[in-house]
Image (cartoon, rainbow, N blue to C red; front, side, top):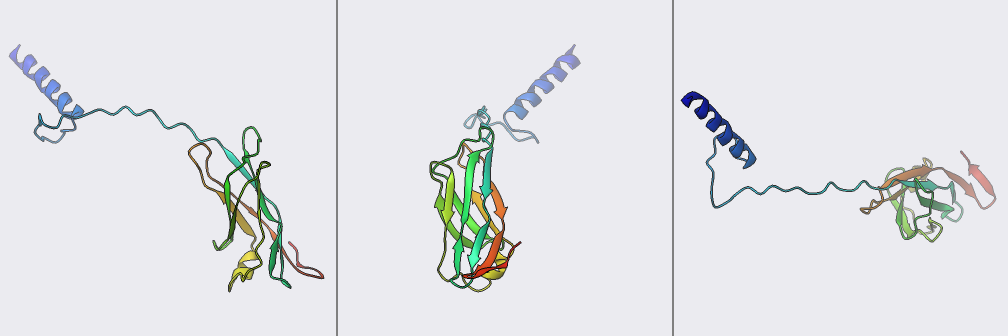
Length: 157
């Protein structure tokens, strides 16, 4: 009977030690009792959809045109207003940022110096991305860019 009681006591002591995070033979401290934290699981983020439109680069004026994206709730299809969209080249160079309007559309145009190598990066198109915000999941998309001049299209995918 003593062997059985000793074994049960050892099991109880081991269980208490594990519950208090004292595995491996560490001594218990009355000054720092373990506190169990039962946090509620984080709610699932809502799915987001983004639809960038085909843009264009007028190399005569070095003007990006029709760079836009529409952001919606992927389940309901409802537009998401007030979401910041970041537009980048395929190489990750930022082209600009814009907030979505009541229809979920954000758009930019950039006529400033695009910098060396940007035109080559634009041949691969551009990206549009929205960061997650605790309610909606982050999302990104890609669209083509046509390259042209004032007189017409030079490179159209």
